[in-house]
Length: 276
Image (cartoon, rainbow, N blue to C red; front, side, top):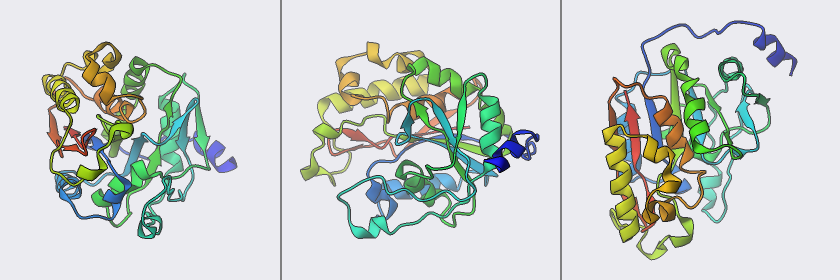
């Protein structure tokens, strides 16, 4: 870790740029990494509206830790953190470089929160399965910030705000999860049915989307106090909290828009958010 210690002593190497957008991507099934479907097309079309970033910081639902960590290796490995899928999926590699410099700057920005510089994780499928559609050449450095499972939702919203200066340095910040994510209730027989959701999922999607488009984020932070539909839609917070990081980075003057806004298999949503 001597290199990281040296980096910690130097100032940022990222110069000021125009303000970057912020994204929340509903990543869905890992199979989206290798399939051609409307959601993959949505990711690619949205990427065409973005300036190419200097680097990407991703908050993935699949790095859920005790405490906060940030990947700080120069070459992050591609993590196949799933099972039961075709071998073709396990053969996918996303060889984007890391950015120890950005990791150190992120650690500094989040003070006094203690952030561990991590050299063992890499890029999990919440990150690479969607970012590969944004930047298929893997030519943009990528780091991940973990989600501290010991902290409440309001904490994560406020922590995200500390990252806002990175947007002025060409850093694309991406939250990756799913707003509606109840795997126990997935209707696998209707997985390919277009925009198919149970009644509670339809209700939850409408409620959340209205709050998002109205810019009324406090009820989303306090989701545990909302309707039963939201409780079923968000049985655990891991896939929901990346959305909260995205919302924490929105300025009052910015516009929020939705894309890939459909339900899948009864109990999942692919709804994604762009803030600019």
